[in-house]
Amino acid sequence: MKVLQILNNIDRRIIYLLLSVVVMVPLILESKIDIVADPYSETAFNEIESEFAGELNKKMLISFDYGPSTSTEVNPMAIAIMKHVLITGNEVHTMALFDTGLAVSEQVVEKVLKDPQIQELSFEVEENIKQLGYVAGGEAAIKNMLKNIESVFPSAPSDIKSLCDYDFIVTLSSGTPGTMEWVSYAGDPSEKQCKDRGAIKLTTGVTAVQAPESIPFVGTGQLKGMLAGLSGASGYEALMEYADRGLASEKMPAQSWAHLLIIFLIVIGNITYFMINKRDSEND
Image 1 (cartoon, rainbow, N blue to C red):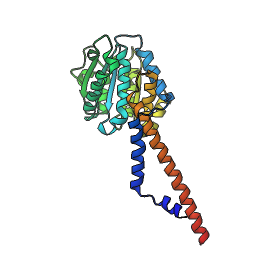
Image 2 (image 1 turned 180 degrees about the vertical axis):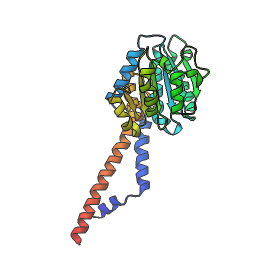
Image 3 (image 1 turned 60 degrees about the horizontal axis):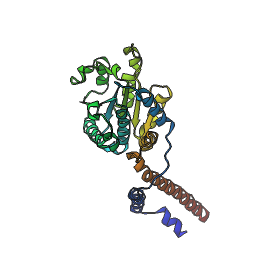
C-alpha cells in the first residue's frame, strides 16, 4: 500500500520533469509519426485548392487575429496556407485585428519568403504579398471593409474596393475579435452585399481550445472547413505533401507523447484514489 501512497502524492515537480522529458526527447531525436488530415482540415484544403489551383489573378486575405502567446500553435497554419496560395502564383494580402498580430504577420511573411520551396519558384513571390497593416475596431472595422476597404486601409490595392473583391478570406484566431466576428459581420452579410460574386468564402484557423466554438459554423457551411490547433495545421501540411516536414508536423510527436503522459497520469491518479478510498472504508 506504500506504493499507492507514493503514487497518490507524486510531487508536482516530478510531473513537470516527466512532461519536459517527453516533450524534449521527440524534438531532439526528430521523431516522426503518421499524420492523417481530419475532415475539417481536408475541407479547408480542398476549398482553397479548388479556388486557386490553375488560376491566376486571384486574391486571398489572411487576418492575423492572434498574438505571440498563441503563435506556436497558429503560425504553422498561416505558413501552410500562405505557401499553398503563393505556389499557385496568386496573391496573399495580410491584415490584423490584434495590435500584436501585425508583428506576427511580418514574422510569418519572413519565414515564408525564406522557405526553400518558395525560393525555387520561377517568379518574384514577394510581389504577390501585400501587407495592409493593423486596424482597431474589431466588428466595426470588418463591417466597414465589407462596404469600402479604402476607408479602413487607405493603402489597399486599387483593385480591391471591398471584401467582396477577395476570392477567399482566412481568419487566424485566438480570441475576440476573431472567427465569430468574421462570420457575423463579413461572411453572412456578404451574400447580400456582394451581389455579383455571392457570399465570401471564409475559413478559419483556431487554437485547439477554440475549435468547439467554430465547428457549428463548418456544419452550416458558413466556414469552409477549419484548422484546429497543431493537429489541424499538420493535417493541412500532410495534404500539401511537403518534401520535408512542415512546422506543425515537426511538433506533433512531442505533443502526442505529452498527451499520452497526461492521460496515463490521470488514469493512475484515479485508480490510486479509488483504491485508497476503498481501503480506508474497509478499515472503518
